[in-house]
Amino acid sequence: MQIEANKILDFIHKTLSIKQNAVWKEQNYAELVATATSYNTYLETVNSEAMPNSDTLHYRINADTSVSGLMNTFLKLTKKQLRKLRGRKAIVIVDYTCEPFFGYTHGDWVHGYRPVPGSRGCYKFLVASIVVGEQRYFVYAKPIGVNDDETFELWQMLAHLHALGIKAKTLLMDRGFARDSENLDLLHDLGIKYLGLYPKYRNIKKIVGKMKRSFINRKFRVKGIPTRLVVGKDKDFAWVFVTNMEFCEFRKYLQLYKKRWNIETGFRVHDEATIKTKSIDIRVRYFLFIAALLLYNAWKSLRIAISFKRFVICAKWSVARNETKPT
Image (cartoon, rainbow, N blue to C red):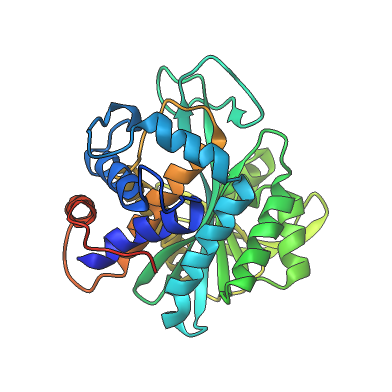
């Protein structure tokens, strides 16, 4: 399977400035990354005389890249893959994913949230995926600093998606985005249809408690920003959404929102190819995060049934046998 190995090699070719007389070639760096991916291990534990070590890769990343440069490379490679969608409208899913931080040095990139026991914080990535029919791809990823403005980052993400030619049919988001009135105001101004799960604040609990019907859909304001409040209630649970769309039946909202779980599934699968590192440099972290996303996208583009883990192992052997060339 040549395509999956191409994704790693192409990414390295477009990211690192490796001279023709260099000791280690793009192929060697690709094999290092593919090996760490296939074993889901720390980059620093991969040792072989046939490959550069982690320190050498760290040096190349530090010397040749920036956060913005890495993002632009990922977007260019993604745009290439999306050509086959031919401008079809997509459901856009936006979310954060966190990578645990275990070190002692904190900086502008390490957030206070501790995703796993023993971690001292986390690196936070803003990620967007799309669903077009049966096709699913990650189309945007950017590390978010402690002091970054969420609404601005959301706007920037939407601008990049527009540049990729992605036409948003609907944007789906979780409580973290939907509770922010500035985010809702931005989507309103841009004319983007959205559906977001909304927290059950005290006023929402009162509304749910007084409901005489199983479904309400009414005008609502989040800190003065107009939207709609949609509540669907059954015996055991009440779903609460904010949206600028009107459906006559609650099941249509729920069916649409359940597509947001695609990104959660994507994160879990992506984690199977996570390339761990002890580096605290955000460029190294971002580089490895993107490499795993590109593998996921290549896997989703396949027309044959194969598990992601098996796919990643095949990618390693394809690179090792030198089956690919930069394009």
